[in-house]
Amino acid sequence: PGFYSKHWIYSLVCLAAMTFLLLPGVCVPAEPSAPLSEPSSEDTLLLVWFHKGGKPPDCWHSFGISGCTITGDRRLYSRAHAVLIAHRDVINSGDWSLPQESRPPGQKWIWFNMNHPANSLRLWEYEGLYNLTLTYREDSDIALPVGYVIPNAFLDDFPMASFAYRLDTSSTSSPRPGFVSWVVSHWGENLERVSLYKHLKEYIQIDVFGGVGTPIPPGKENVVELIRQYRFYLAFENSQYTDYITEKLWNAVQGGAIPVVLGPSRKNYERFLPPEAFIHVDDFPTVWDLARYLLVVKDSPSLIELHLSWRRDYSMYRPYKWREFHCTACRVVRERKGRTDVVQHLAAWFYS
Image (tube, rainbow, N blue to C red; front, side, top):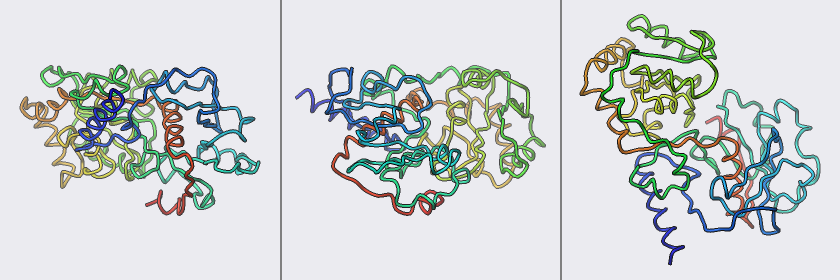
């Protein structure tokens, strides 16, 4: 009875979260299990082909995922149930860097890519090669965004609750010395976000930091601390593609600023956040209308409350990037044991 109650409760967590936001890769019950030590014959073995060094994660101790072992040792290729292959590393290293041995029966190859389509080259060369996809896109076989929010009412049933960030509600009433900030390192005159910034700064003051502005120490924590001093943050993506929403948005959320977003559609963002939690540039017919609205909100306690009051009911979780990605991929492989699909039309899908 206890086991089924855990499944039932966690299904409710997922159902509630999915009413307006996306929680891919998380809505699975954490099964009771003994901690992993040495890999056993019953474990699912995931080989990370381009392992960057460091100790592979213990999926049970770190993420509550049982029966999974992660390795970067290519000598275990013939034993691996799945091989995770990062597209960027294949492009940078050449096709010869792919496994050259015959693929063992039933072994799954996972196409791993967190870059947007414009930075994902030569996809057509790998048609029919992979069995699963792991990307930020919702329609991937294994979908993993870089952040999401969780209703506090269900936080106790979230496996990674101790690592979730309780959103600060003082930002709704506390004054902030800064108006609008933007941290940017990749500057290109042809980028839509650069053009939008140039027009927007004609009407309002924007403080720019990073590689093309006032330097700040590297690291997410320093960016978040900077954002805490501002009422608005420009979460402008460098490219606009389906589901391509990066750490820029989640830095703003964690820092308690109101995100002004440029990226995919408003509807796309609303799969991750309540509709009032951000200001989308597409909501305004002109840049002047956007600037005027920011000026109005800045001096309106009721509008600030409108855009920030949702924080009282949510916490934020930011996955532990590669370690959690690897363990989640292994879990999906384990769930699909005995089933082998082939990814068809990789380029047409990802470029769409």
